[in-house]
Image 1 (cartoon, rainbow, N blue to C red):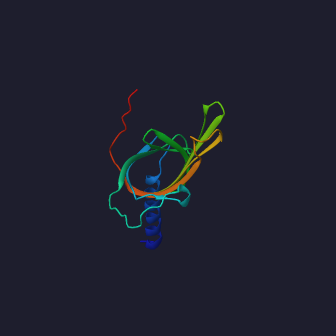
Image 2 (cartoon, helix red, strand yellow; image 1 turned 90 degrees about the vertical axis):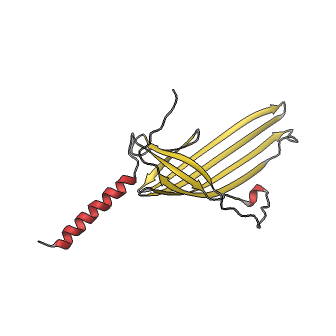
Image 3 (cartoon, rainbow, N blue to C red; image 1 turned 135 degrees about the vertical axis):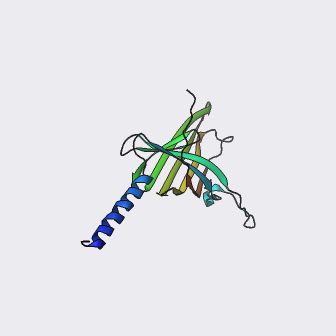
Length: 171
């Protein structure tokens, strides 16, 4: 056999490429993941004082989907919300922002903002990720009933791809 180490290297490289491409969501496809969240952490800006004696081994579970519309646009769906994102290899980043302006009174305007950033890494069927959620409200005018606030929450999750399932959506 001529140069078996080169042949072995080529076969190993092809196997690695095939396994890496299996993790990637391609246009027209979607992947479903069952995940569990580790306990989230509220930032100092939230104004809460957690009791350091508290602990838990209970986690929140959720199902998320990742799908692509083309080679550059990826979407993370969780519940009724969808975030747009991008991919670099087996890593994905998603983000979403919302601003809601209300006029609850004659001389009062409130602005509520929400920002969510999610970073995901997929290795084979395993998924891990981190998120940062920022919520804030500001008020202009007569604001006695509408206090301003802001809060940053961070957290992590992990899980696994669910194989051989299909999404069902009512029309």
